Amino acid sequence: MPRILITGGAGFLGSHLCDKFIGKGYEVICMDNLITGSTENIAHLIGNDQFRFIHHDVTEYMYIDGELDAILHFASPASPVDYLRYPIQTLKVGSLGTHKALGLAKAKKARFLLASTSEVYGDPLTHPQEESYWGNVNPVGIRGVYDEAKRFAEAMTMAYHRYHGLETRIVRIFNTYGPRMRIEDGRAIPAFMSQALRGESLTVFGDGSQTRSVCYVDDLVEGIYQLLLSDESDPVNIGNPDELSMLDLAKEILEISGSSSQIVYKDLPQDDPKVRQPDITRAQTILKWQPNVQRREGLIKTLEYFKQALGKKS
Image (cartoon, rainbow, N blue to C red; front, side, top):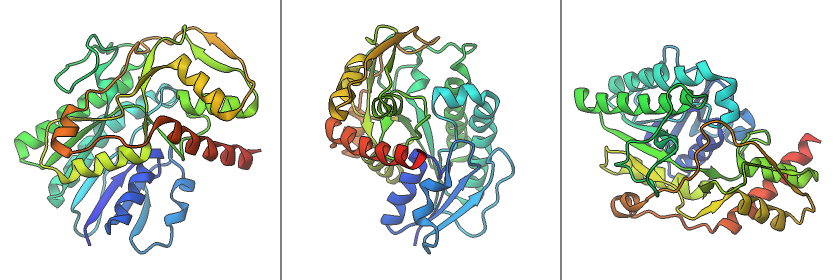
């Protein structure tokens, strides 16, 4: 049975990855300090012989007994609300945490997969964004703590690949949604859905013309799985190129939810990207991967999760 470590495994994406690899017959070790992750996301796995949870901060010394076949490094705050609340922790997990995880991978001779982000492209001057684009990032802006942490993590990963010959993979993740997102996550879909279900006004920033491309979590996890098994060491975009404006997304969620909430407008946050759309040519060519879940289908599934989550909270 292959054995893997997933850092940040109690988070939104990490917990879905735990499910995926257990379903594929892997033994999964989940490591998380629970700053933004939650044991609720992995509660259904407790007691499973293929699963083990370790409460630990990956910026500290990491030790895992026995062999490891792979490490998937997903530990990091990932939403603007989180990395603005935890700026130092975000920088530390991208730098020290990545260094610790790479060191463990080297010691165990394990394949290493880094969860990077479309935020390495910053507020892009090319559209859509392909992996060869170097980005347009403000290193001293409020979002720089996340953007630059991930850019450094990519550089560190490639240094280990080139200098130590470590088998590495880098996935650049574009906006993803689905069950287990936190109600107070701060990103558009959780915000719109929770506001619609509570009968509150939906908050759209700027005039709502800024675009995102949203990918359902099941599609994303399949792409990550395929990337880990591939021989590709250069970064690969994984996301859904189906681009839409934030205003259109808000209207679609209002329609799906049947809510009579209104839309209100607030000032655009500093350094908020105007456009975001992945060029997934490399993923399609190298991994034979592309997203399959239609946006409306994914939004309906996600809305059902938020109905239950808000019901529990109330």
